[in-house]
Length: 252
Image (cartoon, rainbow, N blue to C red; front, top):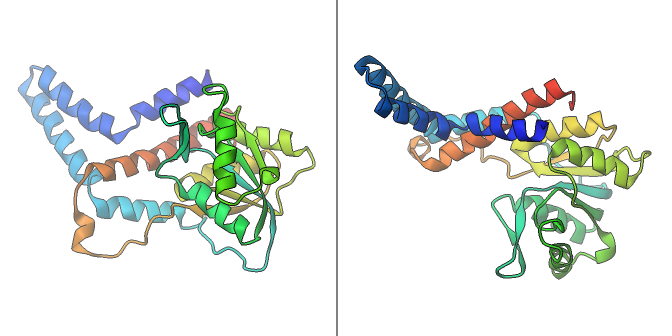
């Protein structure tokens, strides 16, 4: 029930929903005053939220405390990789990686450098046997083609959200697992909620953020408007809402 409610809340807090809602209501309502207010509100939201400079500043403030350099002399037992980087494509029969590709690319790179011993991947559609029974073997073959031994891959394909991923990690890796010699890998925007879920489960890995927003630099190009900026706001607002709802549920 909580999973469904959280998804609905995520939809209604999407900035695109706000903007479209203003324009649709402006079209449907008959009172001229409300039409004007809603139309101006829709335009204002697009101008504010579609601005590249504002979302860049907001992203950097959000991730500032969790982006740290990785120590150069440590070998980690596990990379605890959070899903959301890909899917299994039944048309091609292949693993397909999306915009969060760095979540899997960076751990593989560190593994090949000898910095990580095992890759633990949780909650991603690239190996969801519930949806496609063959997807797990295809994903393992994909990682093997990148130089990862099948013996060093652990896949968790049951969890549906970050909290469940943390709980399942504790179950699969053992109640004594504390994560102190492991990396927690997820996108920088998602890291605050993720690390809190793992700490709540008694796991304390070192945060290793990927897809880190490029530092903002005052430049005329940063003030451009585009739908991609609305998508970036969607991801950031999703995390704000996620932390709020997870606190209410007692997950963090």
